[in-house]
Length: 304
Image 1 (cartoon, one colour):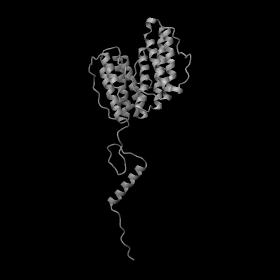
Image 2 (image 1 turned 45 degrees about the vertical axis):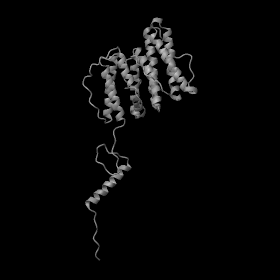
Image 3 (image 1 turned 90 degrees about the vertical axis):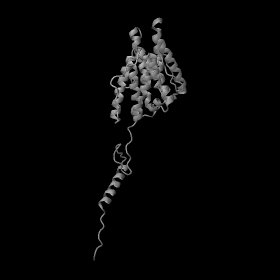
Image 4 (image 1 turned 120 degrees about the vertical axis):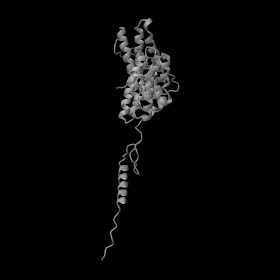
């Protein structure tokens, strides 16, 4: 008996079947091709790196403020310019690690000659809804860094007489309750420092008492029934018997508030209004700390 001829698939048919099978396999494993790779049916091409737009905006802001602070007038300009330089380097490292193309910075920032008030106003202007939105919606790896930059900018504006408008802020009861112990301790310590300081030299302590009293009131109102019980006495890391000891104590108390604010980022403030309230306290404590001799760093309360 004569067998009918066997039909063998052509080479193109085999390759097409292989491509479809490979595509199905890649899709099932949730593999994504790198951006710019040849497209295969059923395989998604990788999009831009996470937070690319937000990080590029932050870098542009930091570089602009570094340039503005360079040779600007006032006692804070040089310190802020140095800190913004550190922030620029850190952002560049993070972006390069994430595969984001970093635009080239100008070699030497131009002389600005800005007044302290004008420099403060520029820092205040960067606290925009877009900047808050970028921090709120960023991945956890970058959200803390972006939020810390907001607190730093707000503190810079505050020490230069351009304190931000905090209208519209909100803060959840649990987060307010978590922040209250450090604020109450700072207020108690500032009151002790003021009492141990000659009247003519109380301006920094008085500013701390006023600022921390306002913060305590905001937090107690927001915390409501969740507010922990206040203590009559709080332990002091240093007994404020001398000017040097009072400076150390104030710095320690304010650093604790800054650290408490930074730690709350793990709770991921859900809205820009929540983050705005957190940045308010964060920047107030940061600015007070600078006035007590703490060196400005671009990521207050964060390691690295």
